[in-house]
Image 1 (cartoon, helix red, strand yellow):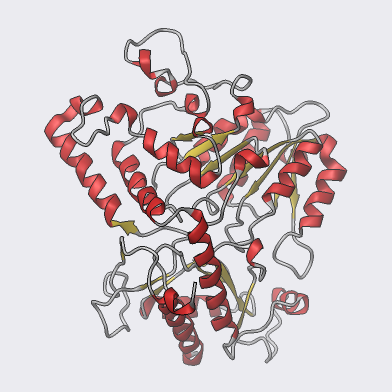
Image 2 (spheres, rainbow, N blue to C red; image 1 turned 60 degrees about the vertical axis):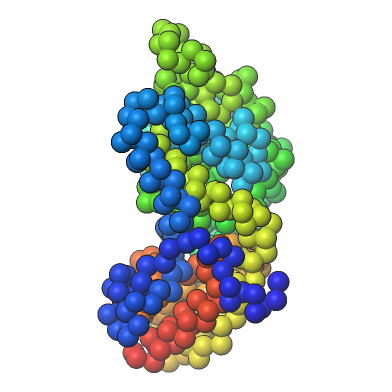
Length: 448
């Protein structure tokens, strides 16, 4: 794909907020579209999703309860997740029977841990990253406590080496090899939310399985961002949200994956009527008969509105060719943005010395009002996100730059105390967005 093609979006189906709508008070082109590089936090609304949601509102008004069984668009609410599960399976590298569109991310994580975390007196630890997303950390802690364990001894957290922000593959694998006999569950994020590191999922999964551990993944920042092959990688389970790169809308419906090797072994522990076989569900039988596979874990009926929003975005993915062309474009766009940022006179390479000094609050002239990038440079170790660390740490530089970016219509997101994340989402962002972000970032530093 030539660079000039990057000036055109892969899909023109998405709606960008204008500068005035995002509060770009210093942007003269008030009605122009903002430079939105925040798809890693909340993806944009697609026109297809908007249309499908409006369809469901119309059916709700015209058919009410009858819409569960008779739907003018042939999407009866009792089966509204069926086409979604097919497309999610394609994004995940899974069989349809292994995927369920349901619930919320952390709720699904608890359901999976209740089924797969089975500590014994000798194998009881949860191996995870020390800086996992807080909701995951809360889940790990509460699951350990629920099993009568002390989180301080049950949770084995891995941290990067001094002077580094990302975990080394060899350190993860060495820990699994050394501690594997005491590890019940290996559970990492596919992509680390703060640094943007894409963990070597296949190798970690294999190492965990070789030591007799269960291996699960939180794919909140990975699904729709990087290619996945959960079935072939022999992943035991995974959970994910869909409102980031999959663009299902704020708080959109989530999902889970359960490898089909477990379908006759790990049946749902916390049954709900929507996980019951559809053929007899509405006969209200007293005994639970789960749908075979991951969908048996469903509990309550899903919102047809949130499912429609997800389906709309997934249809855009399908039209774009799914993850093959999307990933190819993502690698190129992210590399372009990285190169533009590195040309800044305020950029310093993320050497161990720089990171250690910055962490200690060193405000030497070579670090004052500077930034570095803590996301891996290797495209195979990252998705679309670049995390910019502002120096010296704790100086307040990040907030000043972030406010300037927002005032000028460049929308990323801040992670306290010193990181701004910028993510050129390949479905709708262009090279122009990358150029604009780098230009405004430079002006932000100049203004300081």
